[in-house]
Length: 336
Ligand code: AHM
Ligand code: MG
Image (tube, rainbow, N blue to C red):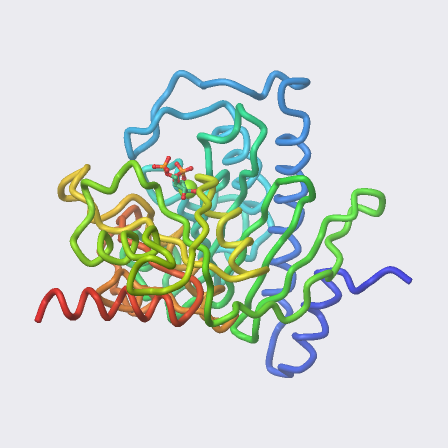
């Protein structure tokens, strides 16, 4: 018998909340459709002429790949007309994306990265879509950037899709974390990984080691100790992974534990980190915490940050709780 589909799962959750109007379920259905269409384009790759650079830069000054633009368009076109959103924010758009005047408005806001891990597009490694759903403030017809600047604790839902050997969707609505695999034969995401939990301990870390000289002392200390393994103070050997796709790293951590770090570095002064708070760090932190893990900048819980800009960057340290706590304690000791 086929398992429960993602939409069935959400409808069952909705029935447990009798005050729910069903609008959120419909929004999620739209997101699922968008991700299925993106999975299709990513999968066709070179066959559809989708690989390579587009010849433009995004708001962050990053070279855009053709698929960055194609997937951003798919996400926007799939969601703008349905009447469940008040506005959108994308990694690929400098400004907030309004809902065109001729479409109805809804009560939700969405922040998204349509294709995370862009550097992996042309080399056939996993990439993904990350999204975060917030409520639009009451009585606001045309939300502005200020209406998006809510801390991560206010997220209604967060999720990501990984386009890898299989296409997977991971989702939380604040009630644990579930993983769904796209069954291409029936065109549905099927619940394959119910109630994902991150082990508290791990012997696996993920960090871009080439940035070591730009890190702060607490992160250098932690990673150096991992590298020393049995011969150092930790008295156990660690393994290292770096896919350079946050979606793949977080998925791995959800399945078998680990710690992922894109910490503060001095490589790009004034930026505060590489990853973006509102459509990378916040949704991933919500998911990781809901699965029993932890997420911090090293100095504060990511979900508590009061955002200042939609494209704000933050240091990210997340995953197995005991390891994240250790890195945070090193930051505290360094300050003291
Ligand atoms: P992107 O949104 O432009 O793809 O950047 C985010 C990605 C993350 O998925 C990944 O963890 C990181 O950038 C990799 O960065 P680096 O190439 O510096 O190792
Ligand atoms: Mg990204």
